[in-house]
Image (tube, rainbow over all chains, first blue to last red; front, side, top):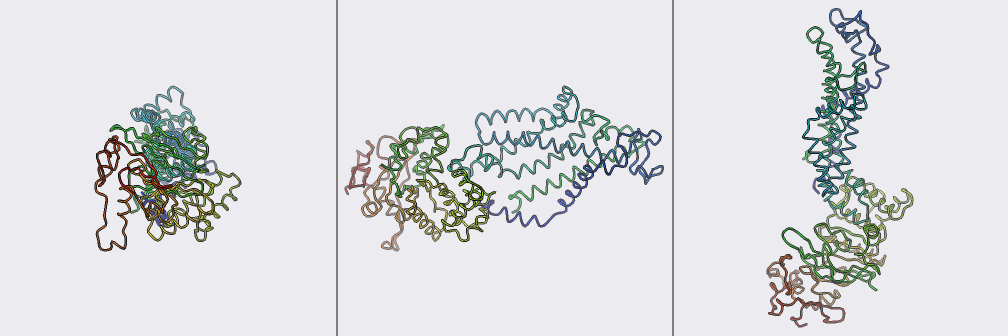
Length: 291
Length: 320
């Protein structure tokens, strides 16, 4: 461990300068997606909920019958696909980010508590984790959303409350090793309170895996939200989300390919970008992989 | 009155394989401004003694009997919060491993400043200035720049200096140094010992120096206590112990040191190994390895008895 601690940071500095393709691609796609989601009201040519039945099921502009006012075509109600994608990105990315933040908050605090204090508290928390892992999360989410009703807040709540176990397990494992290190014993011998040991000495040293899990979870949450929307349990129409657009478009896959393909492509690109970024982060921040 | 007095300390580890009597009836005292060396081989209870004083013995270990008095307060009677206020502020500790004893994600200046803030309050800027001053006191070159370094950017010697600065920042009355130079090479070792001795004299601070190295003891200590298998077997001034060691274990330890007069001969060692601390019975714990052992040694545990003023030995057999 001491050797690792010794080589970690200089290696990190060296690697940071060599920006890989994965990082560049991931970051630029994410920035593009995030930027266009934030600027959706300025960028979108149409109101995403506006129905124009006279122009329904028009293909993208490069195909025959395509209209230049609707570059990516229209859906079965004549709504502009580009506008809906832009606004849908706000929901997908926003819900993903909030849900990851929520689940990280829950998971990291429970993982820190379990790993640091150990004993019965640890056993209790980890059994709860086991229970959560044993139930299929989609099933759990369906149950909760059925009970509470599908709204934006409930969807975020459910997503956060079912995925926190990922953070809890990894943080606990990390804390188990960090708490045995001498600087923690030293800090205790200097009269620091347990809470301070936890927040000032243990948590900062466990940040690397937390960041990595968070990026991977972000990708997962985007798919999760799409899946819930696809099942009709997510954010309700007319609010556009990528998952809902995908579900809606599948009835027309044979006749109007763009309805399901374009939101699917958006989901895929975003998830790919986040995953690549997460991978790169893991490799860059993990000293064990630098040797 | 002594600054710290430890009386009949017993720290036992209740494991599934039996009770390990790591410290079993240790008594000693440290006066203000005194450096006491606690010497013994690995596993004889040196570190457990120091952790007992700090009340930081890890489970399943527990102090089962004895008294630890700091000035006129019994540390074993204090509640957790009162004990927390003793740690760092009145008794500080320096550990063996300078590689892992500092938090790798903060600069050493930040860490020392945090210790200053916790104990003295005041502003962040003032705490930082104190941190730089402390680094200067422990003779870290260009302390203002080094304060902004992370632990991995420093050499082992500098890191140990930073550790000492961190421990001394709150101005403790007693410093427990647990093998502070064991992980360092010899030249750095000498510098660190020199620094410890100088700071100790400057501040009139008492030091409990835990080591297995008699050379270190000779260099910095006023008095020595030799510990074997959880009990102190001989204690006295450095001069007295080095000039006329009595206990067969002390003599054995001193014989193990390389010496120019024995040049060319193989280094001697003490035959055998320390006893299993789960199964110690009534007799002298060194008896199985002792060339002078007689029948009585195996029956009765010898107590520390005065041989000369200030020189106590737990062996009734060997004549002075």
